[in-house]
Length: 277
Image (cartoon, rainbow, N blue to C red; front, side, top):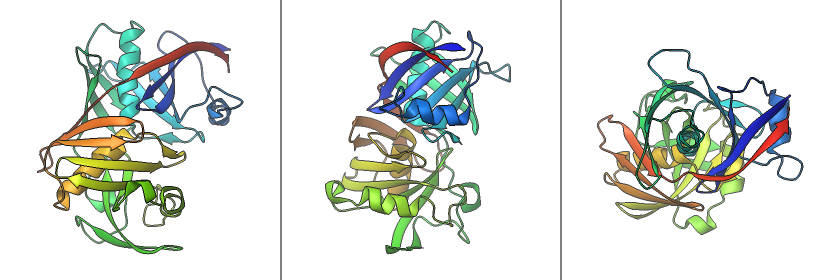
């Protein structure tokens, strides 16, 4: 079975995007891992599937698979690529698009300069809903990690769980080592994405993210949102923050008080192809 696909990236966080609205097909989880291989496959951080919605008040259904074949709840960089893809491929003529995800409805808006504004919804801070094991909400939690010791984290879900650590210098942060130890921590029953944040000033941070099932990526949209929310809750940041990731810059706005988080950034097509699945 042959399927057309597009390769895209959001600040270097790269995706294979497949239209399952005008095409019929199914990609097994073991096949996802093969396709993700950067030597033997297409090569990507995540696979994005564009599907018909299951409810009448949205335009599409959005599904996301990590490079290891596991399905995940949300991806902000992927959402921007999703919006560009459905518009560029003429699956819709709308520039304001509602998509159905595993955790709810997401609003996407294409701008005149081809950036995409994503309404990421409200951050989830209640521990049991992240999910994270803690007796009650706190802006910061001490967590004992085997091989590291005690670390202070912020715990936030943006549709997927994030642990946010503050570091003095992002260039020297032990992202791979600490990320691989914190990701499977038993306090996070669904595992966790781990963000390492350096605060430059109240409106600017640098960030590196170790993603579940992937490892460090060049950018993570939900990770940028979670870092800003955590930074504001911990008193380090103010509304309106530029987040510089290895792949480029995102703008994150959160007014606090459980308002919606908005993320603005680019989405870039790379190439198109066909594959036999």
